[in-house]
Amino acid sequence: MEIIVPNVTPFTKDNRIDKDRLKEHLENLIEKGIDIIFINGTTGMGPSLSAEEKKEILNISYDVTGKIIFQLGGLNLDDTLNLLQYSRDFDIIGVASYSPYYYPQLPSKWVIRYFKTLVEKSPHPVYVYNFPAATGFDMNYELMKQIDGLAGLKDTNDNFVHSLQYKRFLNIKVYNGSDYLTVQSLTYLDGTVTAGGNYMPELLSLQKKLVSEGKINDAFEVQKTYYKFLDIARKYGQMSAHYILVKELQGYDVGYPREPLYPLTEDEIKQLEADVKEIKNEYTFILDKYGITS
Ligand code: FW2
Image (cartoon, rainbow, N blue to C red; front, side, top):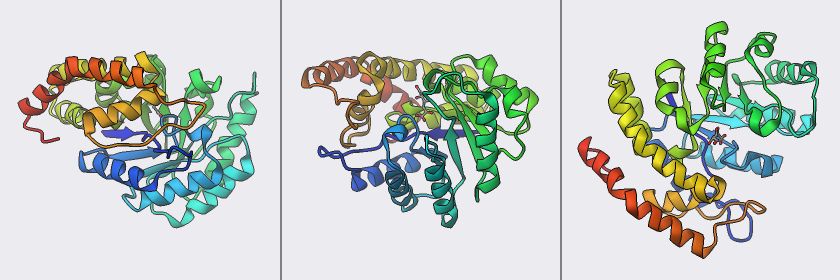
């Protein structure tokens, strides 16, 4: 049962990776019980990173922990194979890739060949990152069955039955990547991958603890508060709101998103802070109730 956080990538105002803020953020997540960091994911703006920047983030993250899944997918196979080779010297949990994206009606045989190539060439266990809403391609369980040697999958999907099918027919690690299915994924799958863990690591760790103790209803009560902050993120545009929510709930600055995912305006930040203020007592109440220091 694992809680996995796809970390935000802190950028500076002039669009470079902010090494110190990334380290501080990852140290906080690990300290608060996060099991695995999923670097260069969607929340980490993987599609907006060059191959060299993906390497740089691996190096910075590895200074903090080896509990890393290294997302290295893209639309240039040479770059991806180069990143696989580069990851050889790092003792990490595994590598992951989203399927080739954007191009329409990709024949399944090309995507299957792509992942077979990664399994063949990888020095680490390989995880498929399935996000049909983002890539336009669904690496469903029937396609996954045609690839030997995969370690697991992250299915970013609000359709929970879709994720259960992998667990039903395959003998691999299965995580769901929907922020709104954390308790359910911890209960019925191998764990959850959730961006909400960037700004609510305490509530995510608590959900795992309660599920592991069989206290599903208590875990769901915590999840209801988790939902309220997720809703705020979506109200303002989650990819940029994450940066302000980390500051609001964790108390340190994680810099800026990378344009064209524009940062929130001053007005939006003020409104978001007001929305957080209205429900922040719920967050602190839960921490007090379970004796959690933030
Ligand atoms: C990633 C994730 C998180 C997403 C979820 C989308 O790589 O960022 O699944 O936050 O809303 O897996």
